[in-house]
Image 1 (cartoon, helix red, strand yellow):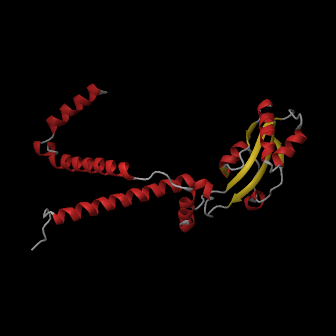
Image 2: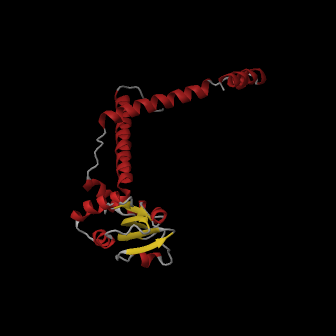
Image 3: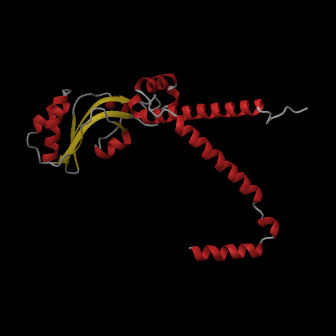
Length: 219
């Protein structure tokens, strides 16, 4: 690749007029951009507070819910699936999966591990509907009604038994749940802090330049 590039550069040098080979203006512009970026980045890195606490993130979310519209249905759900026929203790598994007692999570997870069941038992995990359907291929015909059903769902398909409990859901075009967009909120808050620091830097430098006579009013 390097040899081919050198051949192309030589061909371009021979083919283009000298005026088209002068990049001093572009290089100067590029250098200024690099200098500014390096300087601004160093200034921000030395001063920015990187921690975004829960209260600040939630205030940002509640003040600007329009920034977080859902493009798909989302659910908080717990589920498992395993080969059909491996039904040992299945009645107890149904009870554990439907339970809201956190003490039931550990024995259920151990059962899933022992039986090789694919599972997601974290009650705080949010799933986009298309992601969930890759794991639990339920038939969707009235999503708003089906996702509002909090009963244990169970069905078999293609030789696997699927069990699902939906704990919470949000509809398409609604504001996304806070927990789902919290990482994005934190990034937006940090971006806002960065912009504020850069504005502070600019104002400080311009004020100092005026005070030191480096900038003069136009006559």
